[in-house]
Image (cartoon, rainbow, N blue to C red):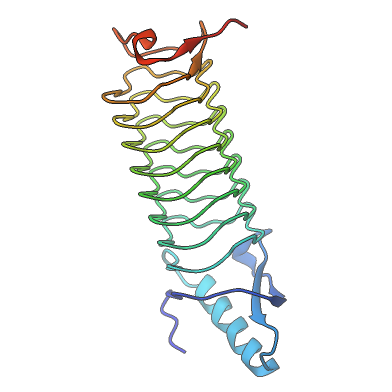
Length: 232
């Protein structure tokens, strides 16, 4: 099996052998499915070890890591296009510059994760916990983030064009110079958020809540866009 840093389309289903390797820190990758021989499992384990210990960014396109424990994992600049991380624990993960286009991260735990300049075009992050995550400069064009958590999230210079961000807690989020053109934030909370210099052409703010601490772009009037001011 020729790895060359690329494993595409691997499915980790009913798994029973866990392989922990040094550069995964505290993460656990499960390898092997029930019914496979010991030899097959050993071959897969060696393949994973080889893959994860070579230089350069990982290529794990279309991989299924649903529910995996990937806390503090380093996927810096990894290619994770169309991969499945639904329900995965990625607390404190490093995903700077990673390509997660079309990836599914529904319900994933991404608190304190670093996704600076990550590419999340058309990614699905509904119900994901991104509290205090760093998404500065990330590309979230057409991403889905309904009912996710972005309190104290760092989204300065992020591209959220046409993103679906409905009923999201964005309290105290940093959105300076973020592109929210055409984004749908209906029912979300922007209390204490900083939107200085943000681009809001065509943004949907129906029933979005904000307060005196919210900072809007200069000359932008949220009351004309359906946003509702609340008192603490």
